Length: 194
Ligand SMILES: Cc1cc2nc3c(=O)[nH]c(=O)nc-3n(C[C@H](O)[C@H](O)[C@H](O)COP(=O)(O)O)c2cc1C
Image (tube, rainbow, N blue to C red; front, side, top):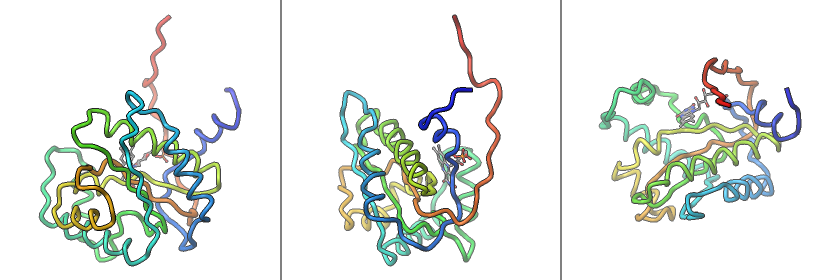
């Protein structure tokens, strides 16, 4: 197995689902956002926008709007994660981004075919950069699933996410509250043809 800083960082990054209350340093926020915008994008489109939210009241309001949004949301396919997400939104202690002190919303033009791909590649850059700085992170899908919820969308518009944009992917970021489990990698998902 080859070791270097990048490969070791890729292997060691884990999704964090328990965060400390302490906010991340401003220069770390800048560094991870900068890592995001160095990601490749289709045709160098870079039509994305990364909105980082650290205000506690705004974060609570987003969590509440997501909780409410799930009450009248019906999954459009049978992906089990969606039903699980809807069910867990009923819980009193529901918090879809695990009380992370920073939430980063990646949005993009909805009629651009590579919108999700570009934002997701950017978030992986951001996750790896976060890990390299001692931060935990997690991809959270709820804002994407509820991207057409009128109340949530209006609130995100108030926060400056343009109405011409759709919500693609979201990152929860903060200091890890506990070590994450290491999910096994699936065998048989690599094929080399020579
Ligand atoms: C497209 C996508 C959506 C995800 N959505 C969520 C989510 O909504 N909530 C969550 O806790 N984790 C979410 N995850 C994180 C995965 O559950 C996690 O990456 C996977 O279990 C492997 O764990 P690891 O990241 O620690 O290697 C998502 C990951 C991806 C790539």
